[in-house]
Structures are given as C-alpha cells and as structure tokens.
Image 1: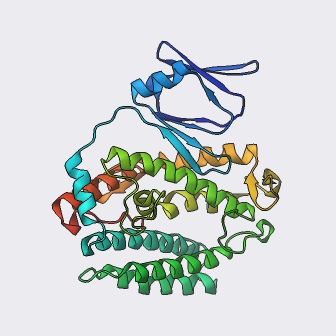
Image 2: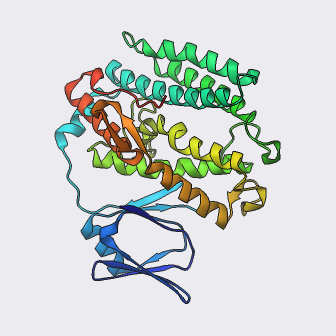
Image 3: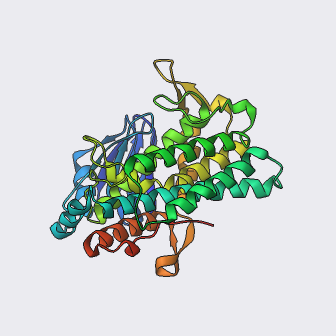
Length: 337
C-alpha cells in the first residue's frame, strides 16, 4: 500500500473503473485504487467529481496541504464513530487524569528528542559540549516527567516542553553545516531552509495524525496538553508531539547532513519574509518522509514490528482506551532507543 502525492500544479485527476487517471499536458499516468491507501494533494491539483466520488466511496483518505506545507483539510466520507468513546474523551479533558495523559505525551517527545541527541553524541565521540550538556539536562526533565503520582499543571508542562525544545534545537545547530544558516527554531514564516523543512514536515505529520485520530474514534479538536484552544486541532497537536522527532526531525537532520539538498533548492516566499521549498526539495522531502512513515519499528505494547504510520494510529487507539477505562497505564508514550 502506498501514498499518492500530487505535487505538480496543473495535474488533473479523473477516475475510471477503480483507477485514478492523472494527466498534465502530455504526461499521463494511471494508479489502481487498490494499491493506494492515502492521497495527499497540493494546491493547483484538480480532482474531478468522479475522482472525488470514487475516493469517498472507497474510503481512501485524501488530504489537502497548502503550498507552505500546512494542513488545509481532508475529504471525509462516511466513517464509523463510537459516541461512548467521544463522551469518555470529553469527560477527562480538564481533569488530573487528562493532564496525566498530556504529561506522557510530552515525556515521549522529550525522550525521542534526547535519543536523537544521544545518537549524534555517539557519532561525534562525545566531543561536542553542547550535545553532552543537552543530553544530561534533558535526562533531568525526563525523570521529573516520569513521576505521575501528581501530574504537573499545564503551565509547568508547557515550561518544561519549551526549555527542552530550545535546548534540543540549540544542540542540533552544532550538527547542521554552517552553509544552511540554521540558528535555531523559527516559524510563521520559517526564515531559513532547515526551518522550512521542519515546518513543512510538521504540516504533513499533522495531516497524518489528524486522520489517525479520527480513525481511532477521537475528537481531533479536544486535547489534553494543548487543551481546548478554539479553531485548532488540539488533540492532533498532542498526539503528534512524540512523533515530531521520530518522523520529521529524523528526516530533516538526515537530509541536511547528507548534502542531497542545498540552499539552491529553496526559494523566497511570495512576501519575501520566509523561505519555501522548491519543487525538487519538495519531491525529495516527501519521498523521504513517506519512506520514514513506512519504516518498521518494534511496537512494545503489541510486541511486534509495525510501520510508523500504523504506530501513529495504534497510539491514538491507546489514548481512546485509556479515556474509557480511566487507567493511565493503558497508554505509554512511544520511544525509540
């Protein structure tokens, strides 16, 4: 099963006999629907009525991204929903139990950020002071977050998450070639190619986690750590925390250190204030992201190897079970050592 990325403006997608037909000028390609489990479309791609109907009827998830990689929306056909599960989710929001779930999600993010730093530290033989200090400092916060007898308040949790994120990106600066101009995390708009890749990747991840949250039967707008900010998919932002370093950061650090891309593969945003991915960078990045989503890792709760995209869904299902049972041990953050 594969993801079909539609990145080229001017592409028209029609449907015939359980097949999607793509055309752009003289270019033609056909994709059997049975071989596709997800479609991701960028601006400028046109889906005919027949194609939309076929995607809805067949239940193939279809996501739409903006040109800067942000999530725009999704096609939603009929889907199975469990009202009891959603009620259970509503009941635990703004409770100590809900904060316990939020704390586990933040713990997962910091553990996985630390694992990436440890990996870099091993590769450099422990000779980079910023890496060593960041690994040690984040270990202190990991131990603090492991104590769940009395979960931290949201403000305390936000503070720890912010400190660790700043430390993580500052340490990673030592691993990015100076030619990339990376001076730490910035966004809205991203002002250098590394931040453009990170923002683009988080947009793709958000779209995938949104889909997984709905499949798991959860309300994507009602979170625990990110709480109930209006017009924002708060639960999706919660669930994607532990996967940011595992999926997006993993791919971005690999790309910038491999010299596959360089600054010429990026372009100024139309307002001149930010940096966007050029066409080649977009295609290479999406290819690497999808390869990462399809990589197999051990999923301890089930003691078997699963692809990362399936692990995202299983983590959503675990949160749903915890909300129903009111048992925090039904959910553990996913960590790669």
